[in-house]
Amino acid sequence: MLVSLLGIPIFTVLLMLQLAIVSRLPLLQGMADLLMLFVIGWALHERVKHAWQWALIGGIMVSLVSATPFFAPLAAYLITTGIGRLLQRQVWQTPILAMLLLTVLGTLIYHGITFVALFFNGTTLPVQESISLVTLPSTLLNLIFALPIFVIVNDLAHWVYPVEVI
Amino acid sequence: MKTSGSGFWQTATLLLVGVGLVLFALSGYMTPLFGSVLSPLVNIQEWLATRYIAVYEFVTVPRDVATLRARNQQLEQEVTNLQAQIIELQQQLREAQVLYALLDFARSNPQGGQYVAAAVVGKDPNPFLKYIFIDRGSDDGLRRGMPVITNQGLVGQVDAVTATAARVRLITDPSSVVNVRIEPHRSEAQLVGSVTGDLIVEMVSQDAPLQPGDLVLTSGLGGTFPSDLLIGQVISVRKQSNELFQSGAVQPVVDFSTLQAVLVITNFRPVDFSPLIPTTSP
Image 1 (cartoon, each protein chain N blue to C red):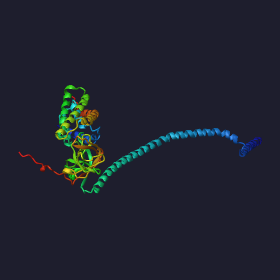
Image 2 (cartoon, rainbow over the protein chains, first blue to last red):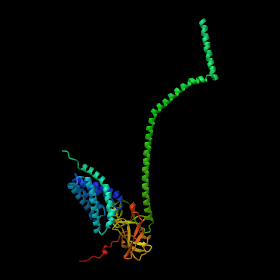
Image 3 (cartoon, rainbow over the protein chains, first blue to last red):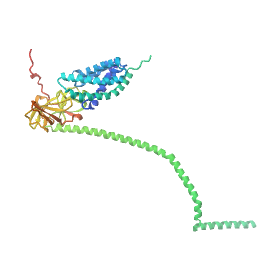
Image 4 (cartoon, rainbow over the protein chains, first blue to last red):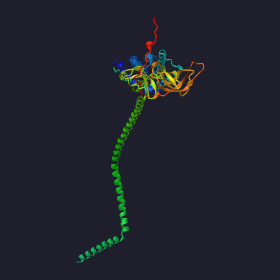
């Protein structure tokens, strides 16, 4: 329970960084998503036992702050966490590769869900421009940010879940 | 008697030699001799003095270097502090210039609106959306739908409000639609945003003489924005004979990428048309 609640201050700090700094560093029209990267890194770590709770906290925070309709960020973060847990348990033994792969997948999922949510909200986005000017630059920025975030998440996971010595 | 006589002569001889040497010295005949004798002594004295000074400097100079280093560090610290102060003052100056510009606009605006100045504190994390966050909320009188401007022109509209902050939808957002008037021919049109942040003026009648350089202002139609707020200038026109309307790209007067402070018009409330919209009865 305490570990789950620890996600609230961490995601609060991340959200402040995202709104104040990262969102102001665009590449074309794309921008990185610190919270999603953190959720991905957290979901991929073998010691982490509260990945779903943290994805829920991050998703709700972003959904409350952002103007994206229908809690789209929450859905995207939960789906990404699900894929991350699947990769962590069954397929990948190299977490850094899984991190990069899931970063690409997560960005595509998030943007796809946003695209659909905006469509049902009455805003139709041009597909080609959205991909070339928003999604691809965002993916590149997320890949750049993925490595440092992975290291930070790794250290945090070792701090939150220390090795039990018997 | 004999002994005392030889002693006298010895003394007299020495005296004569001494007086002679003095007389020679006074007359300058002894100078080469003194020179040849004193020269090695002077050399030895010089060598000794040089070594003494060297030893003295060896003992004392390191202490001076340490003092100078400490002094240098202190001065460098002062330079660093002064540079930090300069940067801080420059930042304050920039903020003051922005606020003065907004204040001038508020004072000179003939419409006599009531304004609340707010700082831009963030941008929406979703890259498809063009929203900003400002540091004023319902505690400062902000309500949903209030127009947001700068001294240059229209920025957007308050979309959501909390007690101490508000979210503003920019006119560049893909879902933004603003009713506009194009000067000088006063054509009515709609200004829409896009995912790239570009502004497009649409629904312009084919008869309208739309051309680059025309000014785009809010028309006030629909009651969502006050009229005559400057938005931008038409930079290109797209007109095809097989289409019902012509359109054009608009260069906004506001630089949305560097927004630092905005004004919220608090005495303007958007008109709510929802009671007038007929509902289908079962």
